[in-house]
Length: 351
View 1 (cartoon, rainbow, N blue to C red):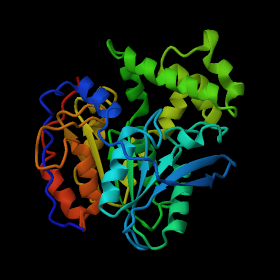
View 2: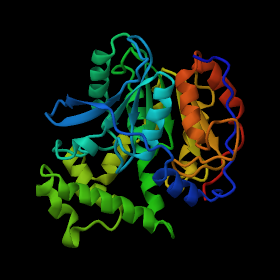
View 3: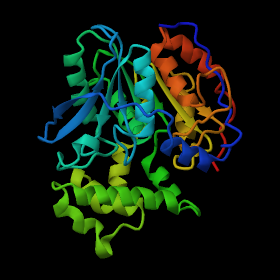
């Protein structure tokens, strides 16, 4: 593994300087068309639901070598382009990767009676228990994307349950204050994102036989007008919260992120159209001298975009290579100190 890593600044590709282009192209276009070769493992959850993890083990991996678990974002799964890309890149470097389908997603569609949500950190704990069983003695890294990053932070922010084998984490564009992130969908020109997520989520409910009995909550006159309605009518009551606001309040990782005690790198963009940069203002102050958690805000990048200009990276996917760097670093603390030097520009309101 490398200990002399350089953390280059993100410079957007000249064709993708717009945050919305970064977001749309970044999530839905991938050069990697790797064939699916993973072994599937089912994980039984405490409430008797199931989730699936996809085990991609390179031929040169041996017991004790590094393992990384990936968590996808809202309405994603193990097939999401960023999950496929990272698996391929990490596998090429001898890292065994477990792609976790959040409850009811991907290969787990129809296996869960309850939906995944931002507070599903105990599901991650169960998946990690399975990874530890399969890879005894291997150090484990966590990489979470968007909502998967929020779940990761909620897990890491509870040190009493964190596995001793988890030695680092990377989260990309995580909503840190859920209520404020949901509000962004009410802005002009953001209807496309809202319609996309609501359409995918309601379709997921209708196609899962375990959730069929709840379709009336998101159908007809109850069809959600926005994400807050969806969470108020469906997510919150099904997972035990009084309302969407109660859910957002109890599951926002801003309240626990300072409790994290393993090296954790959070990267998000100031122009992220889905996670407003100003939601990071308060925790940025709290994390400025934190010994374990590093927050790096880039000026550009959109949401899970980060398509960069030509550089020393092997391809334009800047955030992919920062995850690879973080996971392969011998000393993430030293890399974090270098990153902090690049993170001292004033925080600006996102577009």
